[in-house]
Image (cartoon, rainbow over all chains, first blue to last red; front, side):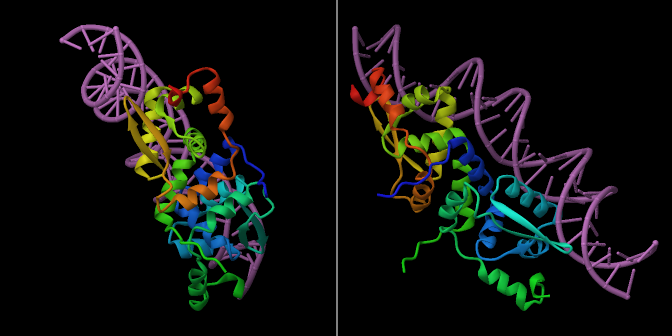
Length: 115
Length: 115
DNA sequence: CAATTATATAAGCAAGCACTTATATATATA
DNA sequence: TATATATATAAGTGCTTGCTTATATAATTG
């Protein structure tokens, strides 16, 4: 029998509250399979840059996502080293993949990492 | 390869937002292994009756929990028939079991279903 | 160095939320 | 039928949240 490391309710509820927002859930869903920079998220989600920036900041604070700077861009990805990653992963498998959204960006020539 | 029925972001974020509250997360965690009536939740969580009642109402509206009236008591349990149950289950396995909380109630003679 | 592009931050605001207190409803029982 | 117990609901309140606009910072490029 396999056992899972449990997360305490206090910490877990913070993660769930953060993922309980459509925009943030979409961001994490996008990042599950690809690295994305903030400007790509702005493009895909059709939201203002400050709004996306604030959401990413919250996700980072909760260790749900990680950032990496490359030149003027900040690339975001899911923080797979975090204590809460197993919870995040368990949740995200229930949502549709977003690969096409990123494919669409590539087709439009708006994908940053293609430069 | 096994596939999972996906949930749309709109619907899923509602579930996550609801579970993103410490009290509601505790309620669902308690209900994962036992049926409980509202007054037992009030006792265990040490919160006011209206507050618990309002939380349960929200969980019911989102089809996370179900109710069953027996006399003057309303017994709550997790709605395992719901479309979103697989998501709920995936989440709840990450939190510690709450069986002892209910055992404690039994010891104190406050368990309703023992009557 | 000036202009451009990407991102972050600050301040303000309207909506949502979780509680409270007071009261209503529903069932059980003497 | 009156009282007690369980639960629901309504209204009020302060805190939180997600956006907006404006501005700051940081890296790039001509």
